[in-house]
Each structure stands twice: as C-alpha cells, then as structure tokens.
Image (tube, rainbow, N blue to C red; front, side, top):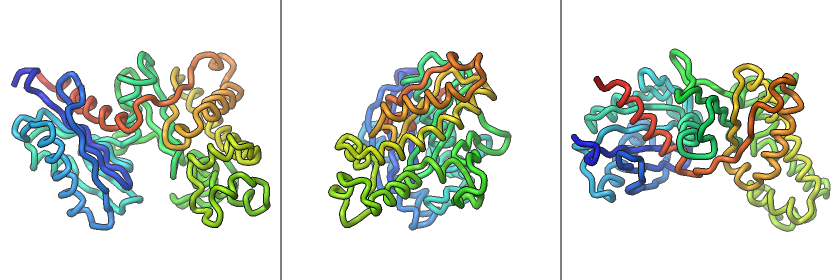
Length: 328
C-alpha cells in the first residue's frame, strides 16, 4: 500500500454523540459521520453502532474497509492503552469493553484505544493551539473535568490505565461528594454542574436578574452559553462564581506545573468555549500566583483551537504514529 492509498479513521466515542472521521495519510479530513451514542442500548449494541458509523464514514469518503491503515478511538473513560480496553465509562454504562480486539477483528487493521481528552490534547499539540510545546497539560471542564498530558510527542499514561485525572485532585477538605465516591474533588468545585448549582442558588436569592429572565422557570437550562450571556448582560454574581471555579482549576494546574514543568496549558470544553477570556485570564493568573517562583513565566495558557476535530484528529494521528513506530 502506497502513502497515497493510506487512510485512517479517527473516532470519538462521546457520552451523547459519537463521531467518525476519515483522514488521508496527510491527515486531511475526507468525510465524517455523527450519530447518537445511546449507551442505554448496551455494550454489544454500542460496538455494533461504532462499527456501523465507521462504515458509513468510509462510504462517504468513497473508501473501502479493506484498505484501511488504522483506527484511533477516543473514549470518555479511563482505558488500558496497551490492551485496548475501555475500563469504566460511567456516563454510558460500559465497563471492561475490549474495543481494540473487536474493531481489529471487524476491520483487520491496527486499532489504538485512548482516552478522549488524551486524544484531544494530542491533536492540539500536533495541529492546534499547543503546537511546538514539549509538555502539554490539557484541562477540559464540562459535566466533569477531563485532563490529559503529552510529553515530547507521547501521551502520558500508566502501565494498566490512562491517567491525568485532574478532575479528581482534592481541592477542598470535607467538600461535596463526588461521583467517584470521594469528597472535595475539583469536579465538585469547578465543573459546569458545580458552577450551575451555585448559580441556581444566586438566581433563587434574586442576585442574577438577567439570568432569571433567560431560564425561568426551568433552572435546568443553566448551560454554558446562557451563563456567558448572563455575564455579558451584567450579572456580576454569575461572573464571580465562574471566576471562583476557574481559580480552583488554576490552582490544580499550578500543582501539575510544579510536578512536571508543563510549558503549555490547553483549556477546552463547552465552558471555556463560551467564556474563553474569563477562563484563560483567571486560570493563568491563579496558576502563576501558586507555582514556584521560577515556574511563573515558564508556561502559556491557551484555548483549544480544533473544537470537535481535536479528539478524532488526535486519535487518528496517534494510531498513525503507533503504526509508523512499529514498522520495520
């Protein structure tokens, strides 16, 4: 197979949506297909859905499965990267799923399984906001807070599991109960759900009149874009709540910089996309104030550039890199 004939699939197994993209050997996108994840259907049906989505993306690119060079798939959970196993995707109810083995059997090509945030950070390092950085820390606050790290072109991971679970760094003694079963995790203080809970209290107290007009009577509509609109309209209490959460992320970032001297911090996810200036300024300032003095001017903080393409492009590129490194 010549380089001109090679093509790759990047796949993002999101909590609600799955996305498959086909790339040529230069990693230019040829096609994409998006479908609902539907974790309630079960693991077997979910794998069948992944396979069907990949086949549809290949068909749209006018490519056949027989000449597929490799697949990279980012998963919303810890994964065993060596064995290609999704370990525990709480949001879709999957556990110990041998994704690599199943997809390699179906498509007869190498398959790389990685955490979705790792895939996104890898994509940003190679093609996006973190180009040229040696050590990249990615922090993606959303429903939870995902983290990933790339060091000299390699995704940092453990022997049996992906790592960089920054959302579960403890930032508050005797804090709120986290979904992981522990208390005081960063996710309980700075995720979108945590921010929305505090904002809802402010709305009930009458401290956010503009936001009340936007969401009344359904406080479940406290989404990132609505929070940003309320801040723009003049709800200063909402801005204070968001900045307090961003400061906690900055403190967690500082701890990571102290540990492994990251030179680029990439912030992404819906909250950051809706309020980029607030998050970049507040996270960076809090991190600079917290790190050891000789690290204070050693890193930059940037907003992810690639959007939905970060994870699929990163996953495909990681699969390509693994295949090339294993070639004789």
